[in-house]
Length: 157
Image (tube, rainbow, N blue to C red; front, side, top):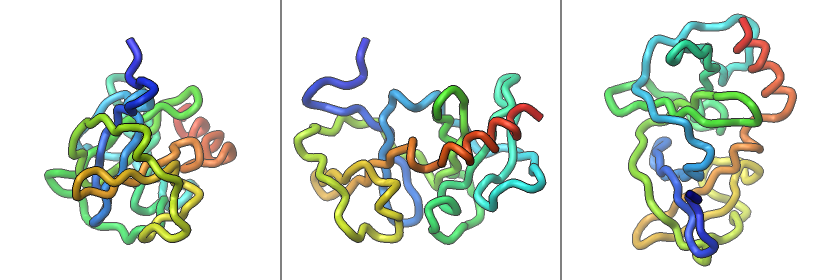
């Protein structure tokens, strides 16, 4: 069963600050409540540490920090979105996971030069849907190969 057709892309919509972002459901493992994160020394600032998720040590990244958005305290709506990057699971901390929707592919536009606070390199495109502007993230560009290798080291500890 495919999650995407030629005319629609199924995405998870989540919140960071005042912006709504979207990631293809094909890259999502699960959405978890925030939990205790074990800090790992000598990692990048945006790597918050690891959690033990059903027996799997999973590196956790604060997506606000990674995208250059000021960090905030976690609260009841904070979520960890477990995504698949290459051959590993990584948790992304987001302010809230809003919903799962289908976006018609013909309304997805290339990222404009300036899109709020997020580096254009991380953006796959934008979609205007009714009164919402969704920023589609390219997860493969959120982390470099070197950073993924570093996370695999963290994961193996």
